[in-house]
Image 1: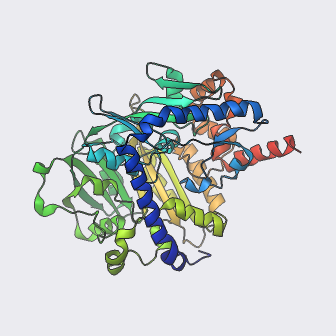
Image 2 (image 1 turned 90 degrees about the vertical axis):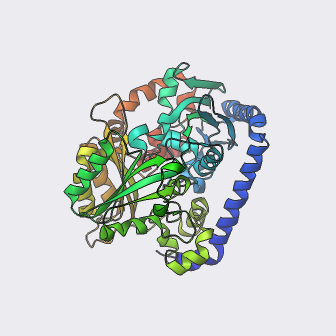
Length: 499
């Protein structure tokens, strides 16, 4: 890195991050306890509607976007496009209702998954899918895609949704569900905020079980890794959670979990990995390559947050000392680092970018192609660990198991082709093997390639955009937001228009 992140972050950003998170959490808790969000939700939605109607009068041909700053996004993309757009303040970050009878929770889009899950757990519930990083928002997970180790059973995060409330480009507030505005309901997921402003979402919830029984299954050949991953994913029972971490092309640990009640656990096998001094999850799991198979019981909330402190395996970039035993004992309580503040510092001091050998991508590929994908990654990046999470994308299809291959880190191979060339190779590989690229990540695909990749969803999406008054004038297409090429094309059009 161009800057010594450890020396910069330690004295300043780490304590600021801790205080920021603490104050934010208590602010949200107090609002929830006082039901402030519920009582003011309609007024705040009306405010969004008024801003949209003002755009119709004074937008001057600009398209709309939220006023949320780019540093609050998980995306590594440079989101300068917002500077040229009409920004709408969407101040919606509250939990509105937990309905234990209907087994649903209604939330506003800026609620973070970490806060929502804590509130649900305290009430005896949880979500069927709980993505690991606490700062991910519900709106982002719905409209940009969310995946977790329970996704082979429940699908992507948006498949938990039973109802959306949105403000559309004509200033109307509409509700969409399987019964009402079905076309809009089907098109909202993965639309990346290009159909309107999401104002609330109703999600399915489950009864909370306090522990998860985890079986750690080390593998020492690539063929064995794929065999175990497929077997555990397709088991009829005993596999509420399935994920894998590959530490090299041939060595991996597959983890299968089953949520259990307190009377089902073996007390001598409890591992409260959420304690501040415990080893970082990916480093702990790697030990099973030497130890062999093992079973243990982990508190469910700690399991949900297992990747938080190490940010999978990226925290060592800015805190290279933080995983050693003494550092964990003395400073583990102050972690995890707030990713939004980190992004702000990165944008301010580094221009918002990493070095050319840094990769942060998720490719979702059919299970039958994952062996070839790991071999391909080994050749073009050599980055490890790799995250492997199976997911059911469409329950109606027979061949419906995909695997999210998460490639996060710096390539150290001598023949690394550079980030852009490598990304183009990955995109071509994903297209050739009928896969998908995660929308949060940078993409260099052409418009034609993007439409080919998401052809299954595009027809419905385009029909809905045409059916909503002013939608095409008000919002860019998804491609224009997630693609560097798309953003540059939009900028050039805007520059010519205002020249």
